[in-house]
Length: 258
Image (cartoon, rainbow, N blue to C red):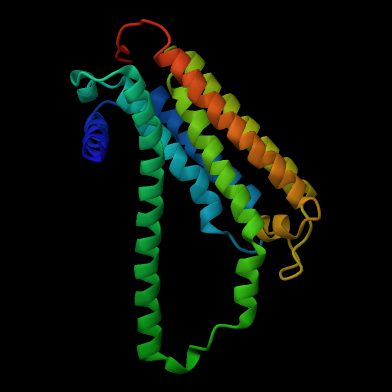
C-alpha cells in the first residue's frame, strides 16, 4: 500500500510539464511577476518587525509554490497520472497529499541549506575570530518558548492555505479558478493585517513581532481556539468541495489550458 502510494506520488510529480521559457505569454508573465511582488511585499509588511522569522514567510510562499505545481500538473499536457487505472477518489487524495509533501520537502530543504550555511559561517568565524563567539544567553530559550502560540497559529494558517488552495485548483473554469485564488489571497492577507493592527508591542524589541506579540496577547488563547476549529472545518469542507468538483460529476478528463 505504501509503495503504491509513493509510486503514484512520483507519477504525479513526473506529470509536471516543463516550463516554456521560449515564448511565454507577456500577460501571463506580467501576472506572475505582479503576484510574486505582492506576495513578497505583504509578507514583509505583515510579518516583519525588527526581525523577520523565516517560518512566517515560508508558510505562505511554500504552499503557493506547491499550489502552482499542482495547477500545472492538473492542467498541463504531460498528464502521466491519467494513464494509470485508478479511481478519481484516489487521485483526489493523492493531490491533497502531494501539496503537503511538496511544501514539507521545500521547508526541510531550505532549513538544511540554511543550517549548512550557518555552520559554515560559524566555523569561519571560529577559525578567524574565536573571541567573538560567546555562549547563547538564556533569553533566547525563553523567546522560543514564548512564541509557541504564534507557531501554532502559523501551523493552522499553513493547513488552511494548503487545503483551500487545492480545492480551488480543482475548479475547471480558468477565470473562476484564478479569481478564487485572488479572492482567497486577499481574504487571508486582510485578516492577517487586521490581526497585526491589534497585536501588542513586544517587550523585548519595542515593536510588533508577529509571533511573539501574538503569543503574549491576552486574547491569543481565544483566537487560537477559534482558528483551530476553523482550520478543521475548512479542511473538511475543502476535501468535500474537491470531491464534488472532481469526483462527484461524471465529467471527462481535465482539458489542456492555453
